[in-house]
Length: 206
Image (cartoon, rainbow, N blue to C red; front, side, top):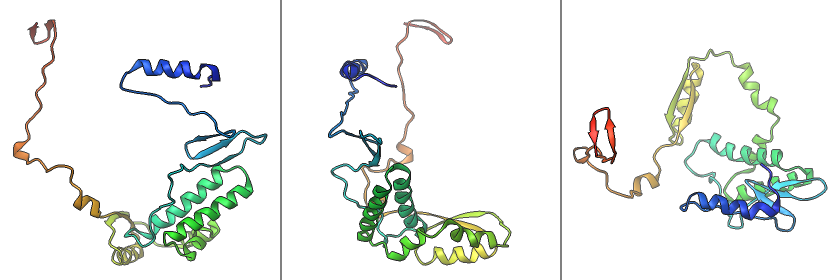
């Protein structure tokens, strides 16, 4: 929906009047640019787009030493690089964004070989899949335990079983409990009272 600038405040006031518990805000352009989702739209002749980061952004991503499968860490690199290529409209800006990503992830422990693996041509990445002659026998999901899960996957893949990992419970899940768990014997069903007037399917109510 397009809305003329002179009607923006009036429209926002109308939305605010619909529900007293919900307040809408508007954000105008600054220096001929406007942040929208992950992009920064710049009002120029070419209508260029850039990646937008909030002022409080810290470039903190999944650390490479964390207890996660390698594919999760490769996914961080791939996702950020794909976003740069799909959002940014200027070639030089794409290069600068990838340099920024590389520097940020390097501080998070990502080694050079991880970036090299992601930057390999797609045909080279998929060669081993095309050459495989093992018939697929299904898929299993295993909890991820560093050093053990990888060995299990290698052995299962040899017999045609595809393996994916799921994270195990984190320290936060173990240590953070906002309230004590309610015992099953103490749980009762909810009771509702709905006032009504007139005839109902079960009789008359006042």
